[in-house]
Image (cartoon, rainbow, N blue to C red):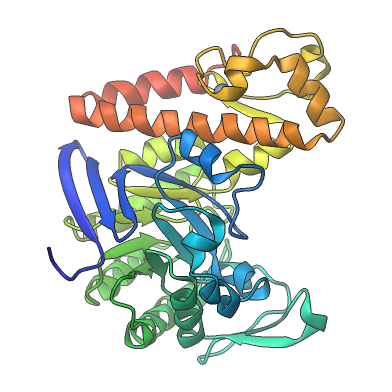
Length: 373
Ligand code: GUN
Ligand code: ZN
């Protein structure tokens, strides 16, 4: 045993793709890993036992939202986030950095970000690196994220450069403030879509010794090609022996292509958010089950899927449930979409193990992006 809160074993590589395992205090997860998003300590529509059944080994929650409700002190008093939400496996919390920047009235200075709470009577709150660390320590996730500056896209060069340096100064403050030895703090690389800023941010971030590193500032509307070139400008400078996490990504094609570029961890609201509006993901792409053409379709969402939804219910039933706003519709669609993502991650991991990832990548994308659904 070591006293590090995180162990990373890199089992095999296939080209730049990596197959590994991360171990944290609440257990292990296989990489490449997809983390479903449980913003308010719940993946909307799924009980933790359902979430487990999808093949999820780790989930994500948000500092920003949990700070508003129920508040970190209540979560701490209830025994921490794992106990509170009934999820005994690994959890990662994001720092709030990303959420506050999407607020229209957030004010940013060297100290932190000040904004008005949506609730709590419009009370002003400042989130700083130190506050984010305190909140995340109270929540008690296994992996916590640095409080960073995520700029929008597109972004002027000077603004992106300032954000890189401020994110580094804030990372130093985060590391200094973080005291729980049973939590792993990840640093976040920024730099917008500028090649030299990505390289600079990667270099400055890796100089701060941490158990893992993330690529931030992507999936902000730059599109697939710029996302991939930004990863290409970042990943080669990252430490080989530590996990790499691409934040907020993404569509299945983004994930497959990012795995091909050496990424180990992902999170995204897409499978769960799309599910609630009636969009199903399948090997042959995604489709809208609310479309009239599925009104009397007796097939499951995906004939290749073995989830509880696909084993038991027709597209016709889901068409009816979603069109009439029945909560079971959201729950079943979410179960299926998250299962689809986790089946994809399992197939990715197997392909890397077998040394056939390149073949998998082409076959998967051919089928997924083909027009004949
Ligand atoms: N989620 C998606 N992108 C980001 C980012 O750049 N920073 C943080 N903290 N979270 C994210
Ligand atoms: Zn299914």
